[in-house]
Image 1 (cartoon, rainbow, N blue to C red):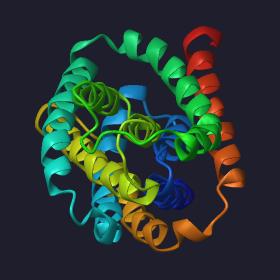
Image 2: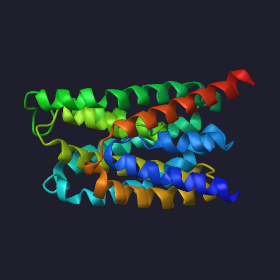
Image 3: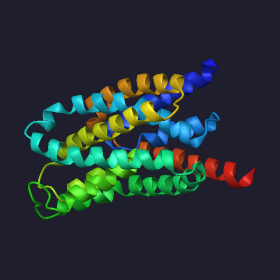
Amino acid sequence: MGLWEALAILVAGIGAGGINAVVGSGTLFTFPVLIALGYPPVVATVSNSIGLAPGSLTSAIGYRRELRGQRRRVIRFGVMSFLGALTGAVALLRLPEDVFTLVVPVLIAGACVLVLLQPRINARLRRRRAGRPDGGPLLPLGIYGAGVYGGYFAAAQGVVLIGLMGSSLDDELQRINALKNALTFIVNSTAAVFYIAFASPQWTVVALVAAGAVVGGYLGSLYGRRLSPRALRLLVVLIGLSAAVQILWSTFGG
């Protein structure tokens, strides 16, 4: 790995950690960079998931003030996130790589749509009627589904979680975002442990993504509330769509 390649991965990790703390779609920063550098999609996903786990922890720590009083939610939803992450990780390693190559562009496109729609989702949440304190009986199933998605391919799982919990829980959006960070850490760390045990990550990539994600996650939790997300959302979408095009081109174009 050359110096410029290592620097590109490190910078992508910083961006991913920061955006995961604020919005949740950091994989759309790191995954396209790894694909552009020639890593196979499954290897890129496995290495990326392991690398982003420490950044998820720093994001959760940065929002620890908003997590106060949510211990019951973290335990209840954390169990579902754990089970979902295991399901998604097993699917990634058991299904043929061709299936992943075909499914991932669709997941990326869906993640980009979610990122673009996030302002409307947030506006709708501000106008919504009060939800239930614990979200009702169907919310844990939705959390499980988000965990499956995160364990298989992590892009925009934070947006999915905010949409699910924000429409179901009677609470402030910043507290919901803090809960999202905690659940994302559970999903990413669960998938990371599974991949370390049963997959073959590229450890140099893991180290660079992890170093960047730790810094980005901490900075994102400190300064993310002060930033206007419009330009960042557009950048995420452009990078994500470029990744989808790259995968489809490598599969069908040559």
